Image (spheres, rainbow, N blue to C red):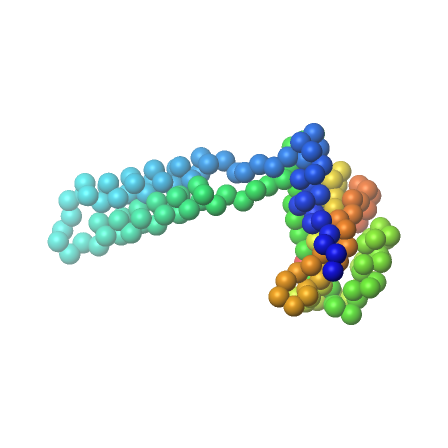
Length: 177
């Protein structure tokens, strides 16, 4: 089976003058770490009654915030943004009935997005339409992905849609979710 590029690979190949990758700011993670350390320190400074639960609660809260901050430093999700207007490219998925595979592939390949609403959807199935788009629709890619035992495989190439098609796809995503 031939391998097709995913939407992310296509976005990576567009170049930094069209789309660039970024990660969320590390500031929130640092604030969480500082709050966690602060709560642990505060628990040691508070003089309380022997049977008080305040000090252990502060320690547990501090450890949770500290762990959350440390984990969020290392696991920040990569985002794609359009270079021109700095809009974030958001990803969404629509699930379709597996029996609609041929029609879905044909409609996406032809760019016939108005007929996508006629296809039978599914809550979760082995066929999905991935959409990556900016809010204004200047950058919009669609791709059909199908489940072949034990993994999802790209059934079509990532297709760039026009801003008019992007508006129709955006409406479809809103109505089907």
